[in-house]
Length: 370
Image: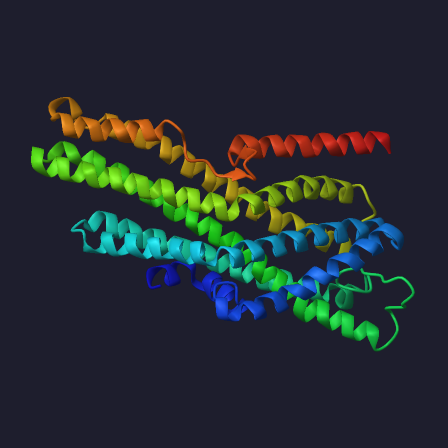
């Protein structure tokens, strides 16, 4: 992979290192995610039977849900290795086609898109490092809590040496780094896929806008290419929906609970560690979710605009073959290309606002009852 490797940058490198994209390294991938997976059970036991601090309990619930999502993301990529790599190869093919076309304007726009995507991805990478470091060493820095993730095992005192040191090191140098890189690399990959798909939709519209300036023969050849490109974009969307729909559902569900928990945090006693944890939860989830909904909404809007671009070609002055191609594009565009949360709800800005309202309503009910 050439251009895709450049575009996905550290995300692709992280997933390759973790073994998610290489079948020969699948045993490494399962080994790396096994410890975060095993951590879920003692963490859940600790919340149910051994918690004494509501602040830490709320935080541990969030961590457990994040671990579950991380594992789901890892398995989604591992079990769809071929589809993931094939989708990256499609991006390479599109880039090669664009580079061979004598369209300096489009290629210049592609370079700007690549530069902006890499800049945002770099910020995400740095945020992942900082977040993982703070979460890993927060108990040592603030003396708030014993472990990075509160756990308990019936009949065993985990605070005794050397058990405590072993568990803490596993959490700080294995569970958190692997979870952070798995979660954010997969999430950022979905954002990049959607961004590139939106760019291709805009490029398709630009090509159809140029048809009016062509003669009959060239216009017919180019409209056929537009029909083929439109079908490739639809298949591209379907592949992404299959890869990320289930994890989108988990992300949306977690975000609803996170917003409510953060509002509960605001009514509790203010401790530095509690504020720090709350800020991290808010920052990571809000940036990830809002960016996901925004890009998914843009992708859907651009897929609708394709029909308008096709209609505004001078099809009334063309022959029957040209008109049939235009009609085919318009018919396909009647159903917008939407990314969903598990196939239940589309990822649109309207749905995001509903989530915020529902989360606040849930907090209000809990606050009144308390």
